[in-house]
Length: 230
Image (cartoon, rainbow, N blue to C red):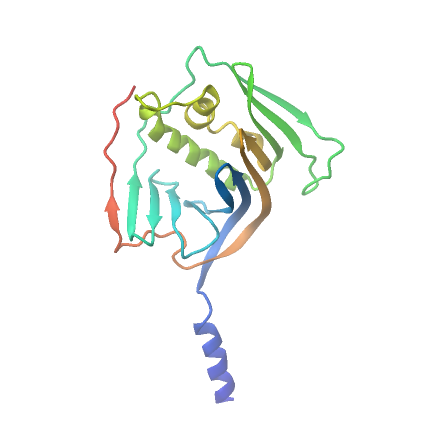
C-alpha cells in the first residue's frame, strides 16, 4: 500500500498544476513571409492571454480590469507594459464603413447554428471577410473586441506619423473600428488581405496551469514612452 501511495504522489508531483478554467479559442494563422502558426486565446472574466500554444514561449496578457497590456518575453526575461490612453478613436467623416451579412443556409451547422458570411467594407472596398456563428463563446469574443479597441488606442497617435503607411482598410480594422469583426460573432475563418485565420478548436472550461495569467515579477519591466495625440 505504501508503494502504491508513493507512485500516486510521484504522478501528481510530475504533472502540471492545474489552477483553473478558461474559455479557449485556437486559430491556425497564415500570413506572407511567415510559417503557418497557431494562435491560442485563453479568456477568463479578468484576463485574456494570447500565445502560440506553449507555456514556454512569449505571450501577450490583457488585464480586463485595469486595461493594461503586457508583452512577456521569457527568453529575454522582459515585460513590455502598455497602458492604453483613454481616447477611443472614432472614424473620420471621410471614412465610410459598411457591413454586408448573409446567412449560409447550405453550410453545415456549428453548435446548431448556421454560419453567417460577413463582409467589412471601407469606402466601398471590401477589407475583411469572415464566416461567423452568432451566440457562441460570447465572453471570449467580447474580450477580443476589448483587446483590439485597447490596441487601437495605443496605435492611434502614431498612425499618421512620418514613415507610417497604413491603407484605408488597415486604418479601419486596426485603428478606427477594430471591434466590428468581433461584434458579428465567433469567427470560424477570417480573411484580411493575405492574412488568413481558421478556427481549429474552441472550448468552455478549458483547464489551465497555475501562473497562466500572471506576469513574472522577476522580469525587467519596460514602459514605452507615450505618444502624443494626432
